[in-house]
Amino acid sequence: MNEELAFIIDSTKELMQHAITHLEKEFRNIRAGRASSAMLGNVTVEYYGSQVPLTQVANVGTMDAHTITVQPWEKQMLHEIEKAIMNANLGFNPMNNGEIVIINVPVLTEERRLELSKQAKAAAETAKVSIRNDRREAMNEIKKDESSEDMKANAEIDIQKLTDKFSAEVDEHYKIKDVEIMKV
View 1 (tube, rainbow, N blue to C red):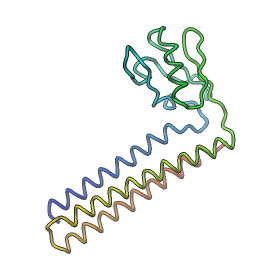
View 2: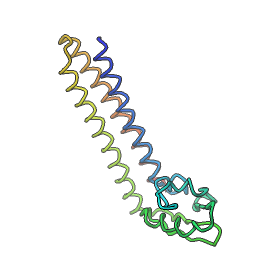
View 3: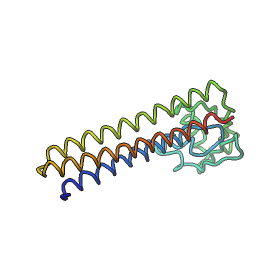
View 4: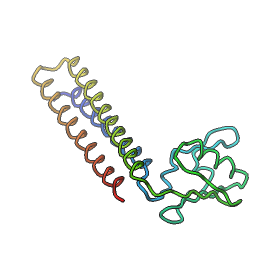
Protein backbone atom coordinates (compact mmCIF):
# COMPACT_ATOMS: atom_id res chain seq x y z
CA MET A 1 0.00 0.00 0.00
CA ASN A 2 1.37 3.41 -0.89
CA GLU A 3 2.00 6.21 1.60
CA GLU A 4 -1.04 8.26 0.55
CA LEU A 5 -3.49 5.46 1.27
CA ALA A 6 -1.72 4.53 4.51
CA PHE A 7 -1.95 8.17 5.62
CA ILE A 8 -5.69 8.27 4.82
CA ILE A 9 -6.27 5.12 6.87
CA ASP A 10 -4.18 6.35 9.81
CA SER A 11 -5.81 9.77 9.91
CA THR A 12 -9.28 8.19 9.69
CA LYS A 13 -8.43 5.87 12.57
CA GLU A 14 -7.33 8.90 14.59
CA LEU A 15 -10.56 10.77 13.81
CA MET A 16 -12.65 7.77 14.79
CA GLN A 17 -10.71 7.47 18.04
CA HIS A 18 -11.53 11.13 18.74
CA ALA A 19 -15.23 10.25 18.39
CA ILE A 20 -14.81 7.53 21.05
CA THR A 21 -12.92 9.91 23.35
CA HIS A 22 -15.66 12.52 22.96
CA LEU A 23 -18.33 9.89 23.71
CA GLU A 24 -16.51 8.87 26.90
CA LYS A 25 -16.41 12.52 27.96
CA GLU A 26 -20.14 12.90 27.25
CA PHE A 27 -20.87 9.76 29.28
CA ARG A 28 -18.89 11.09 32.25
CA ASN A 29 -21.27 14.07 32.32
CA ILE A 30 -24.33 11.82 32.46
CA ARG A 31 -24.71 11.02 36.12
CA ALA A 32 -25.81 7.61 37.24
CA GLY A 33 -26.81 8.11 40.87
CA ARG A 34 -23.48 8.62 42.65
CA ALA A 35 -22.17 12.11 43.26
CA SER A 36 -19.02 12.85 41.28
CA SER A 37 -16.98 15.99 40.73
CA ALA A 38 -17.09 15.16 36.99
CA MET A 39 -20.78 16.13 37.04
CA LEU A 40 -19.68 19.75 37.21
CA GLY A 41 -17.03 19.32 34.49
CA ASN A 42 -18.81 21.55 31.97
CA VAL A 43 -19.66 24.37 34.40
CA THR A 44 -17.97 27.68 33.64
CA VAL A 45 -17.88 30.63 36.04
CA GLU A 46 -17.52 34.31 35.26
CA TYR A 47 -14.22 35.35 36.83
CA TYR A 48 -13.07 38.94 36.36
CA GLY A 49 -14.95 39.33 33.09
CA SER A 50 -14.14 36.00 31.42
CA GLN A 51 -15.63 32.51 31.53
CA VAL A 52 -13.35 29.94 33.18
CA PRO A 53 -13.91 26.29 34.16
CA LEU A 54 -15.19 25.83 37.70
CA THR A 55 -12.09 23.83 38.63
CA GLN A 56 -9.92 26.92 38.04
CA VAL A 57 -11.67 28.96 40.73
CA ALA A 58 -12.62 26.31 43.28
CA ASN A 59 -11.85 22.90 44.70
CA VAL A 60 -14.59 20.43 43.68
CA GLY A 61 -15.01 17.23 45.68
CA THR A 62 -17.52 14.76 47.06
CA MET A 63 -18.48 14.52 50.70
CA ASP A 64 -20.40 11.26 50.31
CA ALA A 65 -22.32 9.35 47.61
CA HIS A 66 -25.00 12.05 47.40
CA THR A 67 -23.17 15.32 48.13
CA ILE A 68 -20.81 17.43 46.01
CA THR A 69 -18.87 20.25 47.65
CA VAL A 70 -17.36 23.26 45.91
CA GLN A 71 -14.92 25.33 47.93
CA PRO A 72 -13.95 28.55 46.16
CA TRP A 73 -10.45 29.89 46.56
CA GLU A 74 -11.91 33.38 46.95
CA LYS A 75 -14.98 33.80 49.17
CA GLN A 76 -16.56 36.46 46.93
CA MET A 77 -16.92 33.79 44.22
CA LEU A 78 -19.60 31.86 46.19
CA HIS A 79 -22.52 33.66 44.54
CA GLU A 80 -20.99 33.42 41.03
CA ILE A 81 -20.39 29.67 41.47
CA GLU A 82 -23.95 29.11 42.65
CA LYS A 83 -25.29 31.08 39.69
CA ALA A 84 -23.09 29.15 37.22
CA ILE A 85 -24.27 25.78 38.57
CA MET A 86 -27.91 26.87 38.29
CA ASN A 87 -27.36 28.17 34.72
CA ALA A 88 -25.71 24.89 33.67
CA ASN A 89 -29.16 23.17 33.81
CA LEU A 90 -27.85 20.07 35.54
CA GLY A 91 -30.93 19.72 37.72
CA PHE A 92 -29.02 20.64 40.90
CA ASN A 93 -30.05 23.14 43.55
CA PRO A 94 -26.82 24.45 45.11
CA MET A 95 -26.77 25.89 48.64
CA ASN A 96 -23.99 27.83 50.30
CA ASN A 97 -23.17 28.08 53.98
CA GLY A 98 -20.91 31.12 53.65
CA GLU A 99 -17.82 28.93 53.21
CA ILE A 100 -18.62 26.31 50.57
CA VAL A 101 -21.30 25.46 48.02
CA ILE A 102 -23.08 22.20 48.84
CA ILE A 103 -24.99 20.28 46.17
CA ASN A 104 -27.25 17.40 47.17
CA VAL A 105 -27.50 14.91 44.32
CA PRO A 106 -31.01 13.49 44.43
CA VAL A 107 -31.64 9.77 44.05
CA LEU A 108 -32.70 9.02 40.49
CA THR A 109 -36.32 8.19 39.79
CA GLU A 110 -37.24 5.57 37.18
CA GLU A 111 -38.46 8.34 34.88
CA ARG A 112 -35.16 10.23 35.21
CA ARG A 113 -33.19 7.01 34.60
CA LEU A 114 -35.08 6.46 31.34
CA GLU A 115 -34.42 10.08 30.36
CA LEU A 116 -30.67 9.65 31.07
CA SER A 117 -30.66 6.40 29.12
CA LYS A 118 -32.16 8.21 26.12
CA GLN A 119 -29.54 10.94 26.51
CA ALA A 120 -26.77 8.31 26.51
CA LYS A 121 -28.31 6.62 23.46
CA ALA A 122 -28.37 9.97 21.63
CA ALA A 123 -24.71 10.59 22.49
CA ALA A 124 -23.81 7.10 21.21
CA GLU A 125 -25.73 7.70 17.98
CA THR A 126 -23.95 11.03 17.50
CA ALA A 127 -20.61 9.23 17.88
CA LYS A 128 -21.67 6.64 15.28
CA VAL A 129 -22.70 9.38 12.86
CA SER A 130 -19.31 11.01 13.34
CA ILE A 131 -17.59 7.69 12.62
CA ARG A 132 -19.67 7.17 9.48
CA ASN A 133 -18.86 10.71 8.33
CA ASP A 134 -15.16 9.97 8.84
CA ARG A 135 -15.61 6.81 6.73
CA ARG A 136 -17.35 8.74 3.95
CA GLU A 137 -14.61 11.36 3.84
CA ALA A 138 -11.92 8.66 3.77
CA MET A 139 -13.69 6.81 0.94
CA ASN A 140 -13.85 10.05 -1.06
CA GLU A 141 -10.13 10.63 -0.50
CA ILE A 142 -9.34 7.08 -1.58
CA LYS A 143 -11.34 7.50 -4.79
CA LYS A 144 -9.35 10.65 -5.61
CA ASP A 145 -6.04 8.86 -5.05
CA GLU A 146 -4.06 7.80 -8.12
CA SER A 147 -3.18 4.31 -6.87
CA SER A 148 -4.18 1.10 -8.61
CA GLU A 149 -7.77 -0.10 -8.29
CA ASP A 150 -6.67 -3.10 -6.21
CA MET A 151 -4.88 -0.86 -3.71
CA LYS A 152 -7.90 1.42 -3.49
CA ALA A 153 -10.21 -1.57 -2.93
CA ASN A 154 -7.96 -2.87 -0.15
CA ALA A 155 -7.87 0.56 1.46
CA GLU A 156 -11.68 0.79 1.32
CA ILE A 157 -11.91 -2.63 3.01
CA ASP A 158 -9.54 -1.42 5.74
CA ILE A 159 -11.64 1.72 6.27
CA GLN A 160 -14.80 -0.38 6.54
CA LYS A 161 -13.12 -2.66 9.11
CA LEU A 162 -12.17 0.41 11.14
CA THR A 163 -15.74 1.70 10.91
CA ASP A 164 -17.14 -1.63 12.10
CA LYS A 165 -14.60 -1.83 14.96
CA PHE A 166 -15.28 1.68 16.23
CA SER A 167 -19.07 1.33 15.86
CA ALA A 168 -18.93 -1.84 17.94
CA GLU A 169 -16.85 0.03 20.52
CA VAL A 170 -19.54 2.74 20.70
CA ASP A 171 -22.20 0.06 21.23
CA GLU A 172 -20.11 -1.50 24.01
CA HIS A 173 -19.64 1.85 25.77
CA TYR A 174 -23.38 2.49 25.53
CA LYS A 175 -24.29 -0.93 26.96
CA ILE A 176 -22.02 -0.36 29.95
CA LYS A 177 -23.39 3.14 30.56
CA ASP A 178 -27.00 1.99 30.18
CA VAL A 179 -26.50 -0.76 32.78
CA GLU A 180 -24.89 1.81 35.10
CA ILE A 181 -27.80 4.25 34.63
CA MET A 182 -30.55 1.68 35.09
CA LYS A 183 -28.97 0.04 38.18
CA VAL A 184 -30.98 1.07 41.25
